[in-house]
Length: 514
Image (cartoon, rainbow, N blue to C red):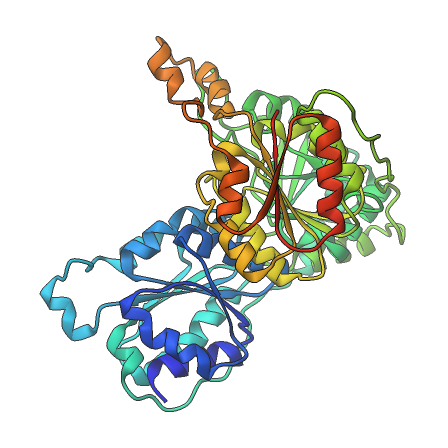
């Protein structure tokens, strides 16, 4: 057994079942070692940003880490944007990054770089193996670090000689770190606050937006009347008919200020106070009322679900939430195809328990409104704001939940960042439907150009936000990657094409000409 084989088998021992990979020369022993670990599924991606985004989607849905395999510092750097999104989502990921052999580093070969330096901004744990004999134990530590509450990115750097030199045995899993319980004193203090009659909001993030946590929050609301909120880009939330409704914080700063107006107490559960996404001249960055008291029921590394359940019991909340979203599907549209018609169609025809990997941007508001009373589903958002996330995210989500339909509402500008994900969808025959909102523009930047007060924008500036000349043909792009694709120009065409996609399995792309 060599070091690479000890690594792959340790991953399996620690419950890692999938490796998303874009390897190079320094990782060839890891590639060969994949055959020694039949419990580890290898998924090839054509670009490192797809590798890291897929690992994010897998981790969010599976609730445990996938591994990545990246080629040296430049390969890791290519994947940093979606690792940034994954860090903001607190997604567990084990990055395995190849490096030059330890004795080769002194020669400063062309691909030599500061791998740890690239990894540091997105990693909660970084380590470089120093010998083949240490690789297995280092791998077990990496998985433990990735799984540590609330979840993080553990980067294990694997010099080539530690992969090919002899090793002993794979390591066994280490115990999970957290989540840690919330003290009874904190529960008592928060129970007094939610019962004091002040206007109170509870801002939820993480696992509390699913299952028991969401139900417990609904029970607390039924007893006290508190508002339940989530971030604009909550990593994962269960929504739709039968679920406890959650108010989503708006995107723009002045809208957040209005949204938060009157809140006297803000209770944080795995979250931070809301702030503006960007700084704008004359607009606030801090968006809570100055007089609002902010307290934590649970920090991200703590057991937020357990804390909500204990709080519900402490205030003698009813056994069931008072409010649940009704099922109210929109009628199928006719006539002109625009964002509203696309949103109504998706909400009306998507089956129960779908996963939405949403990056519709400026076109997405009608869909978001329709989905609040749509069929029950899971919504994954663009947590870190680095666009080009959703197609890669959907690859990982579909592998984590092969029995669920995955839908990707996607602006055409964002989709162009990581269109290589289509090839992996086809190769793995994943049940993903991508809907491209084809407005031929970075539409959000046209809005932001005005909001930041930029002066003197003329034809040259506006051309930087325009995707005409030439126009991308998403049908041809998808077909070139092996994915069935079609174009809709009317509401009727989109309804027919989306209905067909929902009835079949496998990857599909629809270009909606809005």
